[in-house]
Amino acid sequence: MLNILESDGVRTLHFGSSAVQGAMRTDRPNDIELEYVQQMMMWLLFRGDAAHIVQLGLGAAALTKFCYHRLAPAAVAAVELDAGVIDVCRSHFALPPDDDRLSVLNMDALDYVTDFSRRRSIDVLQVDLYDAQAKGPLLSNDAFYAACANCLTANGMMTVNLYCDWPDHLNHLQMIEKSFEAVAWLPEVHDGNMVAIAFKRSPSVDFDDLYVRAKEIHATLGLPAETWVAGLHSWMSHDTESS
Image (cartoon, rainbow, N blue to C red; front, side, top):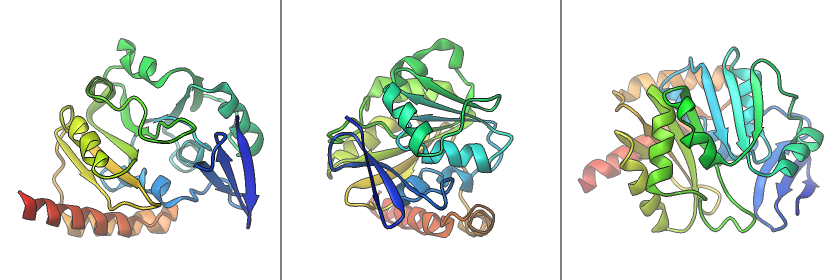
């Protein structure tokens, strides 16, 4: 069952429970309202020219709309198992109709990433897959992340929302690390949401350069990218101390 609530100018999508599956500020429908969803865009710190961006799990279409409207000429695809979610996004969350740049596919995300025709075809994969209970990431296992990695181009990246309780975050991160050369993550937000970024090929990380890039992203796209760099710096400092 899909529920739509509205409060203080923010419309939210629920799958028959209190868990928020997506949100939209009604007077700024193409902005990204939730902080963790903004963090799913942190791949922009490492590249600004993605030609093919894919979202697994449509939610309230915030990522799909943002990439479509703000990152032209990139081709944008979203994969959603529930046809009702696609309908609601089109009727209540300003998701535009498909065209030569946008395709919203009603199919299983696992079927999508395991289709051999998609090997090495995607620059950026954004993974946010949950059911109504939102107890933990769906499809989160070694085989799924290996299939995701296989879909990516040589310098491809994946961001993933890990909404669960610690230490489950660590279990999911370790699965991702089996298929990607490098994995980093930001501090937890929204009471359990931790966003990780996985690199098909390890990037060279210069934090001075990242802060410059973050300021550009903030100025041009309105995303709080400086906080992502601070979060990555915190992660790297902690990771260095613990290694």
